[in-house]
Amino acid sequence: MGFHQRKEPQTLRRRREMERKQKLRKEVFSWIRMFVIVMVVVFIATRFIIINATIPSGSMETTIMTGDRLIGFRFSYWFSDPERGDIILFSYPVDESQTYIKRVIGLPGETVEIRDGGIYIDGSEVPLEENYLPEEWYWENDGYYFEVPEDCYFVLGDNRNDSLDGRFWAEKAMEAGLASTEEEALQYSFVRQDQIKGKAIFTYYNHFSNLTNTADYQID
Image 1: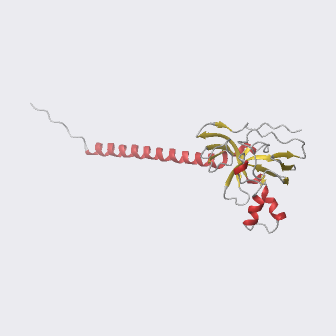
Image 2: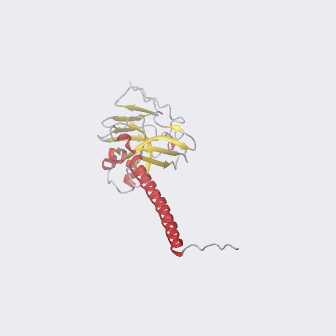
Image 3: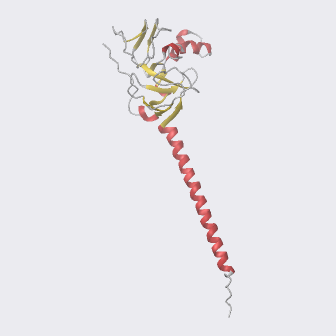
């Protein structure tokens, strides 16, 4: 006596097909939701918490090399002010669409004199000890005097012989037509507090390097 396989009822097949489709929809929705959450977290992190930057020039060598990638914290100055020696990312005063990275040298209210390759703060008799400079500073190293306004900072690149920094921005502002006199252009020599995007913390490519403790100043 032979046995015949019973066919699955059509209603049962439909129910299983519907369950399969529902399961697939739930899985797709789960992946979409996870993707959206990740994108939101990344947006919030990059907009409000971290700065991920690639260095295009050699103005901070050898502290930061051309092509290095670094992480900066946007919240570093939420509750405290920049300190001398900090490496900061900021909107270039002459063209705020560009982001620059330099080292803080002069603080609000200070005077900064550049003389014979040395930096003298508030008339100090001895220059800053700048052990981060890659070589002897011989280019544009004399004859500069700046009075840093309140809520502003004077910054320089570590590679002084190849750095477009606060020494030259007033001239660049004149060339760009942002000021008609040298006196008007002087304001562009400084980075305003509200132009600072964050503090550089470390490089992670091409090598790892801690950027938070690269200066040890002694001022008499």
